[in-house]
Length: 390
Image (tube, rainbow, N blue to C red; front, side):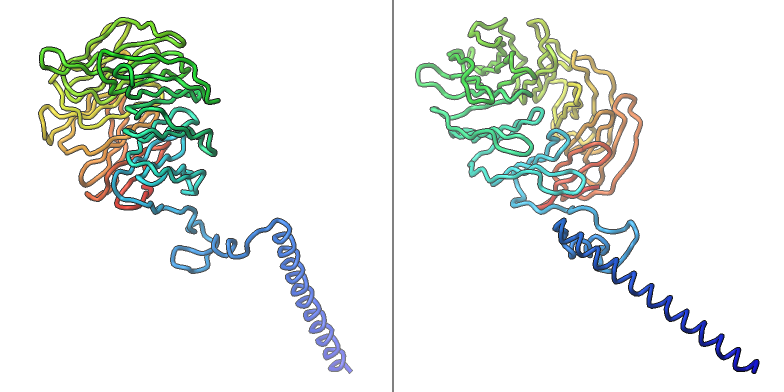
């Protein structure tokens, strides 16, 4: 009798266990069906879920080692590629296209093919200006959509864009040597004037688009002389002509009310109608430079041509040198963030706090890296036909 009772109890436990297992199975089935219904409604791709939980070797994983970005990002060219900080995104200009990349995942925010033979890029705020230097086409875009694409009457020499979308164009002239035209983002001509003193080699707008500077090259006593002229919005009357030191001008650029003048053998700013040198003419040989978000400048230079012992200087927008960092290496490129500067050498990338010169980190590198672009705490490299993330 006791044996029968134990047998009955065993059977009841077995049936209870089977009912529990069946309940678990049905719950799992219900959850899966519900998930499929939700994904169908939300148009979620099942394969993308699978990919999210697949590591770089194709194995299923629930760890944080899954692939979370598309780096390295493939380009349509390997030569003449420009990678720049474009409103905290990566702006990538190639001979064929312009692409705006999300810097965290390398997803394409916006892209277009330009078809220009000699494309040049200028960015300010959310606006990008791509123009065909020596030809007539140019276009204005934001980080996510086109604004307009137009054609000038004469070939474009140089151009710039302000943070409000105002565009300044310097072209050759039918009547004089050069014409300057300022155009709003609504494609309205704001003002224009002509120049007969020489050819415009660079042009710069301040953030508001209300102040303009042009650098004009002319021959004086068989020597090339570069002069900077400034203008206010709506007027062809100009301020004092400021002659720059002899040498080749790399760029003029507004920093508040000052104007940076970066040359191959000199550096200085124009303030209150006068040129104030940061480095005297022929005291440096400029290798590369980059501006900070506050308008200061980081410049790498050698003491003489082809020097392998280089110096990296932090220069305020008033032209005062605040700090120098000496490197026994050949500097190829630099890129600055709010507090750090990344230095590309032949075999590594070194980061420094440029205000006190403290080294912050090193990354292994090889000679295939052509340029770098720093955003936040990350540095991006261009090598061959890809952009990768360190």
